[in-house]
Structures are given as C-alpha cells and as structure tokens.
Image (tube, rainbow, N blue to C red):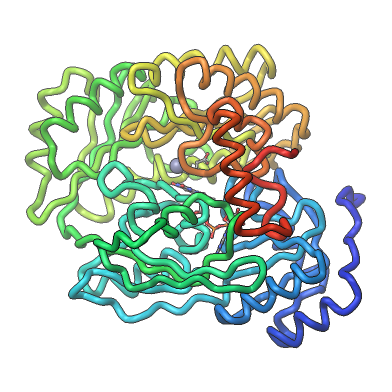
Length: 478
Ligand code: FAD
Ligand code: 2HG
Ligand code: ZN
C-alpha cells in the first residue's frame, strides 16, 4: 500500500543535537518504525508525520526541550497515552512529538489530605494501583485507563464513567506544574483546598488540549473507595424512558454513581464483536447501566428503587465483581466494538435534558440524509446528558470481518456538520468530554461567541507567543 502521508519534514540544523543533549540519544527517536506509533491516533482517522519523538524524563528536561524547539521555530505536539479521540495528540503538520510517558512517577499517597502528586505521564491505572491500597481512588475512571495518562486527562478535562458523582478531571486537580513554551516552569502543587491567591492555573490548564503549556506534574484530590457496589443493566423501551428513569433514580438513590446507556445497535454490535452475553431477548431499544456505591451493600436499595420505576421492562442486577463486570462489558466495550467496523466519525455531544431523547431518535435521520446506509451507534453518559454518536459510513461486515476503509475527510466533515447543526439547534454542546482537537475546531463558532474565541486566542498568545504548542487544535484556523 503506498504511503499517502505527507513527507517527513527535516528538523532544522542543530535541533536534534540540542534535543539529544537534553534528553540523551536514546530519547530522541527518529526511527520511522518507532515514530509511526506516535503519528496515528487511536481511531486511525488522523495520521501525520514527525521528524522526531522526544521523551523527556523530568520537568527540567520538558522545559529545555520546549525552549530548544521554540528557539528553532519548531512546533510541538504533546502526547500522553495517545488515546484521545479528536486528533489532538498527533503531529499533523510535521511537528515534533513531546511524549510524556517517561514522566510516570507516582508520589506517596497523602492519606491525611486524601491527595497524591503524580507525573503527567503516569497512566490512570498506575495511579489507582498506588492509591487503592490506601482506600482512596481517583474520582475519574474511563475504559482507556491502562493507557490514558493523567496529563492527557487534565489536558482534555476527561469526564468518564462516574462524572455524575465526582465531576470531570477539573474537579480532581488541586495543584499543577507545567512547562511553558519558552522553557519557564510554573509550579503550584501544595494542594490547599482554600487558596484564593489569584488566577486558577489548574482550572485554566484543564481542557487546554496542550495549547498553553505541557503539564508535568499534577496534585490530585482522591475520593474514598466505597467497597460495596451494586450494578444493574436495565432494558427500557425508548430514550424518553431512559431519561425519565435517570430523573427518578437520582431523587431516591444518594449512592448513585453511574447512569450509562447504549442503544439497540450498540448492544447488538458489542455482542457480535466480542461474544458478550446480553441478558435480554429481544435486545431493548436502550440498555441502561446503573451503579450504586456505598459503605453498605446498596443492592436492596437499588432493587427497591427499580421496582418502583415503570420504565424498566427487564433487569439484570448483581453485586458480585464477576457478574457486575459482565454487565459493565455491554457499555465499556462500545468504543472497541465500533472500531471493529471501520474508521468512525466520533461525535461527543451534550444535550439539555429536555432535548436528549428526541435528539437520540432524530440523529439517525440527520445522518441518513448526508450518509445513506451509515451505521449510527448512540451510547454514553446519559446521567450527564452526554451522548457519543459514532457514525461508520463504510462499515465492514462485522462478526470478525475486517473493518471497512476510512471514508475520507469530506465524509467525516459532512456527517459532523449535519449532527452539530442538530445539536446547536437544540441548545447543546459539540464536545462534552473529548475536547475540540483538530476534528471540531472549525465548528467552535457554533457554541462559542466571537468574543470568547478572541479571549481564547489572547490567552494562547500570552502563554505561547511564538505559537509552538499544538498548533492544529482548539482555536479555528485564522
Ligand atoms: P493523548 O491522547 O495523548 O492527548 C490528548 C490531548 O492532550 C492532546 O491534545 C495532547 O496534546 C494533550 N496532552 C497530553 N498530555 C499532555 C500534557 N502532559 N500536557 C499538555 N497537554 C497534553 N474520554 C473521556 O473523557 N471519557 C471517557 O469515558 C473516555 N473513554 C475512552 C475509552 C476508550 C476505549 C478510548 C480509546 C478513549 C476514551 N476517552 C475517554 C478518550 C481519552 O482516553 C481521553 O481523552 C484521555 O484523557 C486522553 O489521555 P491520553 O493520555 O491518551 O492523552
Ligand atoms: C466512552 O464514554 C468514551 O466510552 C469513548 O468517551 C466514546 O467511543 C466513543 O465515542
Ligand atoms: Zn465518554
């Protein structure tokens, strides 16, 4: 297959030597076989080229790498676990990739404050492995936990599977350290919960998508591990019923931590792709996953609350880890299952509660009008009003057959325009948790005013006047 990617741009004279002097020979990777893994995003939709992947091992090295690149006029894409879904972590226009994966130290758990300081390149799984023995957990969890890094989760303000209870990443960050593009370092890691001494830098960097600074260390607040969990997978007849169920359960279950949903197409796809057993026949219009966590077994309270809800057509309920994992798989494997079909257009939207059900129904006709025959899978964090609309325009045959080919940028764009118009018409947001990245930056005007975008640009210019950091994301092309 011919390589359709743009040619690798040469690094300016002396830059690679300068970078090697900072991080060592082994950590400036130029071997195309190795750099290829950093040039393609998780979905396969966004592929670029880089002259080098640089792997600093400390904050000072990150700062020196950025200073060298800025001095040479070379742009930099920060990359953590490369699990982002909006094309923000790959070098689309020949940038140097700054990989944070070596910044993976996890400090001692501060049990008194319920906090921990971690390197930006530590994966979520690694951090949790350190905190769980102390009875403490990170408030955000997501299916990409084995690869997604804390720095990437901060940069995207990741939401995940229990934002309903603990909020997104922004609510977990109580201190931050980051290197600016010119090599200066800002560090405020004390983690004081009350600290009204000026601008909130953690808040600013959460959701900044690598455009303002490279996050090097993060002080996280931790939440108590609630040892008892009860999980239910519920069959409901419509999205309207799913929304009514969410509203009803929220009122009576103080331990409610998760309310997720998957539509019929998604449930069938997960079952087909991975042989996962679905406890309902026929497959319901929507499967809702509910989980409660408490200091006592919440199974009886959950069962009683569900017995009162007319929307529940059928239910499977469990409080033992193995059966709970079986129920979770129906929701957690959706992203992997879509990937078996082909290269999706991934849209990650929030709708006002009153609009969500109608949107979830109408989106099929909206997509069919611009991409007849496309497979549309709708799932997500329905408790947060957040739906993931995955559209595969040229799907493979499923059942283990090879994925279909990428339909191309024009088709992704056509689908995006149509769905976002519907989201905007209903007063929603075009990104709930994955960010704007490169995939959506041309659509920011739908949800942000010209004045807001001007402020974004001014903040960017103040922190990174040379425009070194992640030039292809967030703010629309000038
Ligand atoms: P990357 O993909 O490497 O980078 C993402 C962005 O952050 C890029 O713009 C990059 O430049 C920037 N960046 C990375 N590290 C730094 C740093 N140290 N400093 C500054 N900028 C940086 N997301 C959710 O919100 N909720 C989910 O439930 C969820 N589930 C997922 C499930 C699967 C199976 C997959 C594949 C993805 C999922 N995601 C989810 C998306 C993804 O995991 C998150 O966006 C995650 O936060 C990305 O972390 P990462 O380390 O992989 O970042
Ligand atoms: C999830 O909630 C992730 O599973 C990924 O945010 C969503 O694949 C997607 O579109
Ligand atoms: Zn999600």
